[in-house]
Amino acid sequence: MKIKIEKAKISLFLFLFPFVSFAATLNDVSSKILNFFKLIPPIFASLALFYFIYGLTSYVSGVDEKQKAQAKNSIFYGVIAIFVMFSIGGIVALIRDVLGI
Image (cartoon, one colour):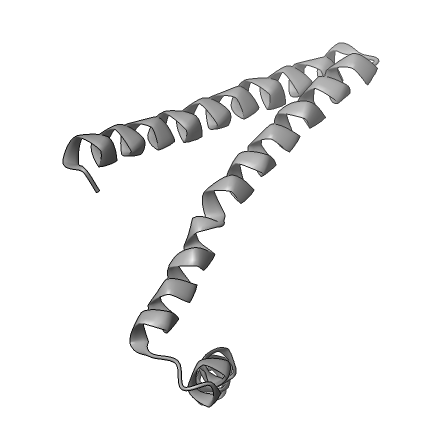
């Protein structure tokens, strides 16, 4: 347990060292962290799209019915993931427009 805490401290230090060495303010640090979190939705959307494409290629190249059934399942969950992500993005954009954020 103590080793994990030490590793966490070292990781935090290495993450924040460039900000400290260049005399970054708290606003700079928070903007870097927010920019990092802004990258997460496009990454997940890309993963969902790749999973959908994987399902399509598995379905086309599937030989027996078991493989095609698994591919249909992959396609279904890929479409659901894409739909949910873009729906949430649309709802967030609508709320931001309404509130003027």
